[in-house]
Every structure is written in structure tokens, then in C-alpha cells.
Length: 355
Image (spheres, rainbow, N blue to C red):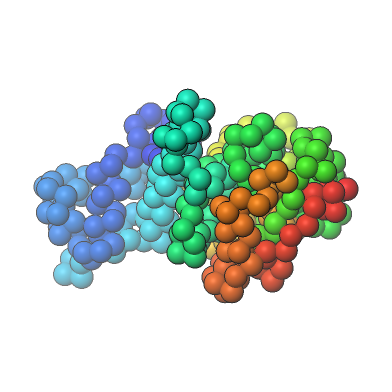
């Protein structure tokens, strides 16, 4: 069975039945009310229906969603809490994508005097757990708004060049792989036309279930017949990272079971590992910690926002520079495991970074 995060829902490919909105509502209510019976009452369903729904999805995920003991109420298990966060993140990302589509339509088809987009910064970006913090600080530290939708590093840079967004978020490996990343990205943009703003440094590595039951220690272990992985989508920076690491280690992708199983965010692949639908994935340390997974570091990378030079002086772009340079951003980023914002807000040309 594979559990897939898509369009703000979770679905089992075995049954094709999505996680219903009722389950999401019940998980939220159990978390706030501390009782499944109270959650059922507030959701206006019978206790039996709520209990049966929990049992159904517990069986499908292979993990308990709630810890319910007679006389002691109920609480979410670490998996249940992680599942709720993943569903909410997916829903938020879908809403952001809808808002971005609406804005692009408005800009193209409505007369200028009817378009209220001057204060709206549109970002297409490789997925990063820092995006929710950016949304929050962007609103509180300026009069502008920001919408972030996800399309992988390569796809986002292409959309920046075509004028479909104001900024593109992408990541660049530090160390030995850096030049390979540079060569890949340079073919997508004219570096002379692009300015970069550093946002964070973060650690990427292998994510496995607690206790590492399959004893996965290195990339070569992914080729073992009893190992099932889940991958990121083509054009994502993490997929590019994996492919480069495999090439460096002389490992053929087709020898890895699950290499073609693709998801679009770090949250989605970590949830699949936590739920037992996959044994391993590559992602950020913060994504692993979020779902109580073990993390085996591979490398550190730098996450940048790219902006066209002809947009650089726009107020909404300068707000982005100000937020990323600020003490609030740096202090809050340090709360994410494996993240560092020491040099956040540093501005440089794409020519300096990508050559």
C-alpha cells in the first residue's frame, strides 16, 4: 500500500479512498478536547462512527492515530499529530497555489486599474519548512503579502525567467556537489539578470523510522531487495541531489525499489516513511524530527531566493530582503532542527554563486 499526499488530502492507492475531512476534523478536536467522545460530539457524529473511522485509518496506515484509554481521555499519537500537520500543510500549499493561479489570471486579463497586486509577492519555490515562518513574518513586518507555491528548484527558476513569479526558491549543495548543481542551474537562467538572497542553510539526509528497523546506513543500502523508498518529483532540488549522489556512488537508479514513487514535499515523503508505506526517503532534518524519524545526514545546502534585476527595487521584493535579514527570521529559523540562518539576507549576484 502507498499513501499519497495530493491536493490537500491523503489517499490510499489500495482503496483509492481519500482521508475524509471528517477524520481531519476529529484529529483536530481530539488534540484540543482531549477526548474522542467530545470530538465526536463537536463534529456532530456518533461515537461509534468516530471510533470506526479511527480504526479504519489506523489499519490502513499501520500506525495508531490516537491514544485512547478508558477514564483517561484521548490524545494524538506522534504519528497522528504528524499526519494532522501534514494534511494541514498540504491544504495550505494547495490554497497558496490557487491564490497564485488567480493572481496570474488577474494580472494577465484584468485592466491595470482593476488589479490590486502591487503589494503581493508571488514566489514559486522548492519546498522548505521555513515557508510558513516567511508567510507570517512577511505579513507582520510590512504592508505587503506573499503567496508561495511549490514547483521544485528547476521548475521555479524556469517560471522566474518566464515572468510567472517574482521570486524563485531553490537550493544549492555545499561541498563536492556544488559545481554539479551550478552547472544544472546555469542552463536555466541568465545569471547576469538575476540577484540572489540567501535564506537558510539546512541539512539533508536519509529519513528512516525510529530504531532504523531495516538497518539503513548508507546510499548503497537502498539497493537491497527488502528496502522500499519514496522519492521527490523530477525538477526538485532534492531529486537532483539524490541523482548526483547516486551517480557519485556508481549506483543505478533502476536498482532501487520505489525510486519512481514520487511526492512533492518533504512533509509528504516523511509522512510516508512514518506510516510504513516506505522504508526511507531523502529530506531535511527538520522534516524527520517533525514525525519522530531518525535522520542520517548526507550534506548541508544553501537555500536562496532568486529575483530578476528588473524587479529588484519593487517594494514587495525589498520587504523580502528586509524579512530575511531581520533578527526575528534568524531567531525563529534556529528553532528548526538542522537549519541555520547566520548569513540570511546576504545579497549577491547569480554570477557570483553560479559562476
